[in-house]
Image (cartoon, rainbow, N blue to C red; front, side, top):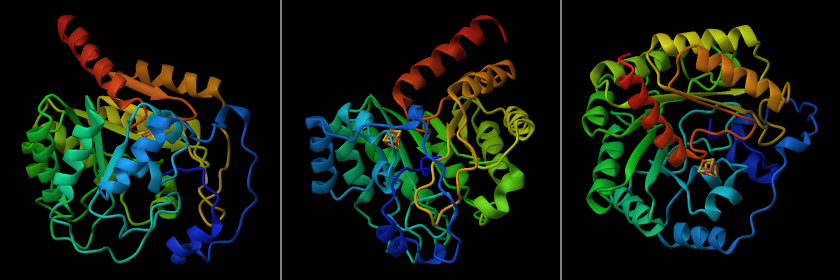
Length: 322
Ligand code: SF4
């Protein structure tokens, strides 16, 4: 979900995504006015960039060329990406580089924690690339990062956005035991589109991960997101909502897919703000504690404010004895 992007740097993409070169170029739909964002120029944006370079940190904001970077970094809200910057999967929506990853960096967790402290984050989102090459899929690096952030910033709430840990039987428990405040894992799209959009992943593996987190610790908030505009139908979106509710997921995000380059999956449709509103209304009626649905919604967009709303929604529900 963080990975749907707006960059059009073709040369860079061909270098970063050699395996995506064979996909036929498809016509690019013109972006509607509700999707356009201003180039980042604020002093805070430049300070955040400098901090990331000085600490040698990777962010999904930059790797995915997120359209919200100007707004988020102006407020010094950044989403850290751990386990290196190279992913072992090649999803057709995602701008993150695919290839053979570097060796794990033993100091990465400490540097992320310093970054969180220096930015003064009240709520932090930590995500990662997929690391199918590692025995635990990178689970211990998530645990280390959570622990390091807690050590340096005990008042900061922690949200993790993880891979699916497919075929890594012992990955989830240690992360749940480290008790992140929010455990997020994105379904990304409807099951019918997995073979083309998320070919290395399985819809029911992702659903089961979310369900398992909730079974292991019902106090941890669970969150998931999908992109729209990839050719899915409204009925399919509603089925995904039902599946997520059946897995007891608390928070749903829905945002517009943006094609990073012409080598990536094409945008089939720009969903209007009114249609997003309608999806949000439907999702709320289905019982999610929180729903964020808008063209520029991303997993970590406004994650700090949304976490406060999520807590308030749970307290209100408990007060009603539900
Ligand atoms: S929405 Fe998330 S990924 Fe995008 S810039 Fe903001 S914090 Fe970064």
